[in-house]
Image (cartoon, rainbow, N blue to C red):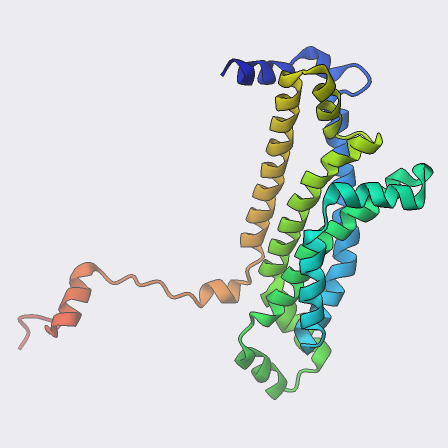
Length: 248
């Protein structure tokens, strides 16, 4: 508990607002790398996922590639890309690594969202004369949006956790406090920065969870009929007793 108190004291210390790596600037840089990587990963994965989900083609290959990408060690991938692209291209190399690690979750959310739609809904849309583009845009995309947001949510958390490693190649972010604190045995600094990273991840996760609930089409929620009958009503219905008792 003493170390935990020291960690919070480190977080709220006035020194965190000054120096070479002020905490607000590190949080902003961490979010910047995360935002850029998520946007690029989404631009790549969402169209591909929609193509797979709508046509059914390439699903097995997408699953295999996504599974293999999840097994790639983040730290090794960043170092490999830095060595391949050169030390002068470290920001680009790190961003490419973040994008590659975020694509599998977003891709899975995109095509899973379309595959989860009841085929009878798609058949009904074709029966009324909708084109394939109209089915995709007006039917499949709105109904598959919650699962897509879930995929973006998982990809964002993956990227937030991986951006910590950007500090290892001198790109800053919240991981810089951990890299600095390990050789100096500054455990309050290490734990404090870890708490900030966890708080940032939980905040983003909460925002995406709220968005995921918000984007559910109103027609879907309206179709969930709630049983408002009273317990006595249900009891009488089960027992076969007439509702209007005493009326002849």
